[in-house]
Length: 421
Image 1 (tube, one colour):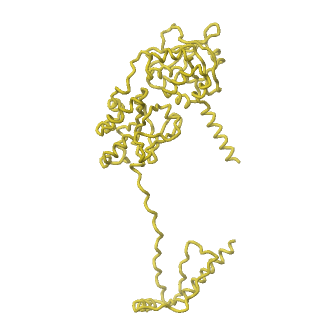
Image 2: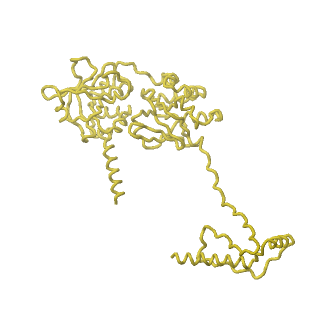
Image 3: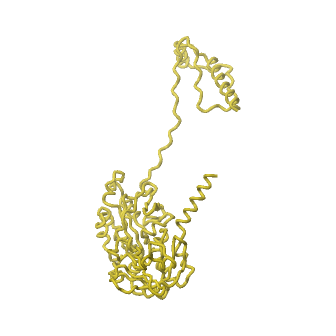
């Protein structure tokens, strides 16, 4: 019963640490359907679901449409990241803020693209019971952009969903030029991230032009091995691959979809890669431990090291190891060795008692009777007669005596088996 209780406790803890799904929560409130849709399109829903303690500041469809109509998806993602606080706030806590004001870190701060306090939000308990929200990077004395409207959903102290009146605007987030994934120089991005070897391979094989740039417009995720990864001793000699095999290896390092870090953390099913076809699976599985994500191939694995770029619908990661698909590099298992052949027993010395035949490691069945001795000796040819004479010169071992010894050992084994029962 102790084991059962431990399993139940583990399942309970797992449920508690993954107790929310923001898309499902907002699906019950049609007034936030546009906000919910953009969480899905930008894959922020995966990042939200992978975290344990946070507050989501949602916008009504009217407030969200004003933001979405003027900006591309990459800018909308940055703006919505400012609306995810990495702390738990409900109505009671908002009105009990120490000194009336506090700063809260947001999801935008974790992207590495938020210098200074751009990734933080100022929360202030205003006079008259109102609570204001604004960018912590705004000039001192600036009016707060939004105010608290109402509670939407709380799962203490895991996730809180609060409605605010309008978007929180951080300096430069909405005005920064948005790079286009289709026009981006992928080789330059890869080289800057320390993946020159990978960039050279996808360029020389034609993979970059034919596949990557085509997929980038629809959605693309690249797992680029670092230059050090190609120097590892367990990396196969790529020069021995055919061009088709090398292309498959390179395509294996990409997905035909946009999967930023948050989406990877919540991925459970195997992921198809650009190399996936009817002839082979060429898939990847994901293992998550805290904030670390590991890709597994079935032959090796690699940590997702850094995010080189995340511009929807394109995401490029660096990985520590070259990913080796079993379809290209697995070898068939060696055949199992056959039963070892026992060496022929040496003839017994003259005058010694005949040695019993060796007993098999597998005990004989108690229901098998030993064979009866032959009634007559088989005919011997001239060669056999000479061998028999030669053997007898070293010591006489006649067939009846040897058979008697075998019968005795077999009988002893049978008696031992019955006694053991």
